[in-house]
Image (cartoon, rainbow, N blue to C red):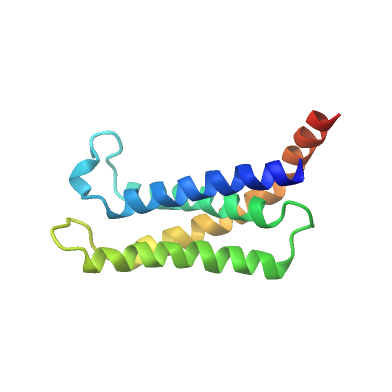
Length: 135
């Protein structure tokens, strides 16, 4: 269970990071604005996307032990740092309709915190499911 769980989360996390980089760096014209079109919608999307990143990192790093403050800080810094990196890369990519926005960085950080907090709710259910499958 332990190693299969960790391998599974590693693969999901790797795929998610690649998807997140593509979503962050692809030209804005790639995505249709007709689906979600209200003020602040992109900030909500940033928060949701980084909530899942925070949750995945939380579950990956806290698979065996109980969550610690140190681990939560690591999850926050890593996931938020990745979001900041994606925003900074938008400054250097030419021919892009993307731009650095501090509000996006804040939305990413808020999403990561919500993801960490969600991990405290999701982890016990996940542990029960995995333990049930072991029997």
